[in-house]
Amino acid sequence: MNPSEQQRFDCLYQQHLTNLTLQGKRPATIDAYSRAVRRISAYFDCCPDKLTTADLKRYFADLIASHSWSTVKLDRNGLQFFYRHVLNQSWQWLNIVKPPQVNHLPDILTPAEVSIVISLTHKLRYQVCFLTLYSMG
Image 1 (cartoon, rainbow, N blue to C red):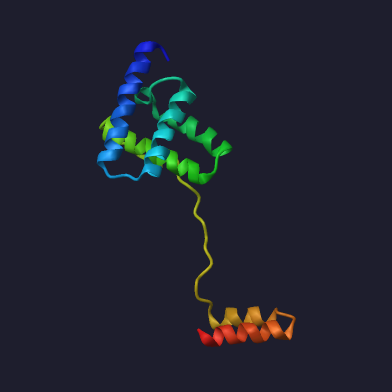
Image 2 (image 1 turned 60 degrees about the horizontal axis):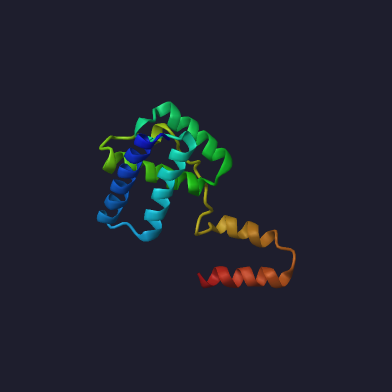
């Protein structure tokens, strides 16, 4: 970045930190959201206010390839906060990046599922253990 652009970035970054503090964000959130702004600025070597949707898509495509989904979500939320509260622009992150849906196992097994688990258990002591656990609720 040239000196004038660096100065503009520093001003916007300071506004970002101030807004995060005024919104009552926790220190860990402030750190993560500010890291997102620094990371995208370093990636493009320019101030984030000049980025287009195509730039954001390219950035997130590279970020998904190199980082975990939790990092991607933190960066998405940090940049969304930056766009909303510092630049006063709406940013539709759903159109840019959406994390994959994760299927979780149910907390409560049906009686049929319990019978399958017990029938697939080969040792009698484990069958007794599972039956006892199931009967206790």
